Image (cartoon, rainbow, N blue to C red; front, side):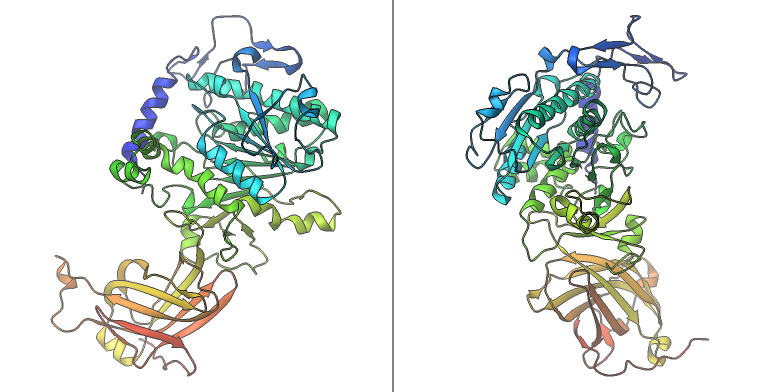
Length: 533
């Protein structure tokens, strides 16, 4: 459920932050640029920046030049296991800063880029840096463009073009002076930082003829980027592998801050890409969750869905090996929830690990080509999964099919309106009681399927099925006898490891409202069905 109040407040803040536009849009859609004949501004080695199409049009009412390099002044802090808590500043104009640093040229290099109204010392950046260094002996470089990320928003949008070029020059200097391999560089960018990463990748190809290894876009910003030309936004051509996590893809006019359209090789839509679980809390609850901090609670209240992208990603760096964080390709969130795309052994659908390890899903292709980087053969693949509402976010995915009996008793009794819940049991434990489907009418002979998520129970062993009929003001729900429903069998499937267990009610197929029944493996033939004429 989207926190509409928080979203509208954030929309208002963005509007005010952007109220200093130097370009205006007339009612007929014409974009007015600054009162000057200058259509491009140049900054020496960092090149020239046009404000003509596609950088400004009806969909992108921005006619701002990047501010000067001296004003934006991005800072690059290197962290390694040898200086995990102390920043070593790198300057591409002074290679000595690189030679004197702890940077290991043969190790992977991760760049982390923040978004609007942020800087390089944000807690999430520190947490991600720590997670990456725990994962492996790597180099982590934070891209702090805080001096250029302040309002108006349109100016920050323009500034990331310059920061992208400067970052590309830094990578080129490391490549030339230290022998760093660009294919070992991975840029992780949140919101505007995602598009900044795209500019880095584009500049490396255009100016230096090399291709970045990977870009991860964490809910790339929608305003001024949605439906624009590929060179304006992050695009799958900006690196050898581009993966995107969409968490706030509700249209901007309704409060969303992230893009909805797929723009990478793999585009992940946890929980459908919008309305993240746990983001519908009251402000007081969020303040309490943030240990009483009003500012932190307010920040989460305003953009909870948007920040979920980096919270999910951070967890995937060192995720519990018992949880696979697997996502499944599907045409839509609705189809995924309906179970129409479940399974990883289908030739026409792929499964991919969500987040940091998503590259593993296509590394086999690279291996067959003797390449050290992945080489995706497809792009804009939409993948879905369900997460928990709080840490740990990783959950196992299950497909549950409930088959209502078509026996003579069931047909004579007729269908019922109610709710099913299930507890799935396995070798590692059992899930909580998980609601199945929405409250609806279940007819004799009907089959009902849905995808749910909870803890990983390991090898499937059985389940407990709960049935509840609720009386409402609707006269059709009134009953004078015990409310029962006849269940033929239940099929439970797990995504990883891939398992399918057919379960039958213990004893009788009759479920009485408010009671539960054990489901065990069907070691006997299910009851015969009769066709309803």
